[in-house]
Length: 115
Length: 109
Image (cartoon, rainbow over all chains, first blue to last red; front, side, top):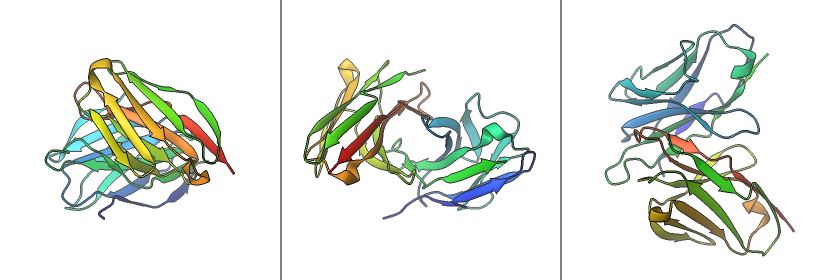
């Protein structure tokens, strides 16, 4: 069964460093998303991406964040200068197949630890 | 945007018991999903259920869209059912999922 994959599974970085989280969405999906979950809290939407551009972003997704689909398969989230409060689990998701256009499938997540 | 409220926040069961988890949402939805977050943090799709009833093994879900709620039923619970159950509905634009705070289920043997 097709699935969303994410790398790395765990990333440790120092405050102020740039990180890039990578995702490979399900191949025939059209919509791509990033979410984050701070430990013990609910999952929060960051950004959605369709047709090579951002379709919506939350208040969390400020100028420190950017997304890119550099080729036909990868979808990346970049944090330019990490802060302690960026420590969280980051989930990539994808959706977009005919009548189940909005059913989102999530990857296993990347646990980001900022020290 | 939509508000998603889940209840109860915590649930402790003995193996073999049945349970019902509830999700209320503040506006009409065209997409409602239930997820199970396992102890490793993975979000597992359980149901895509904007309306009606679906069953998958010991789990079933019902969404009554006109009354803005959805229920997740777990029958004959097992220890592997432990984890956090989230429901999520779409934002106003339909471009994102808004999650509830989850129900933490602990099943003991």
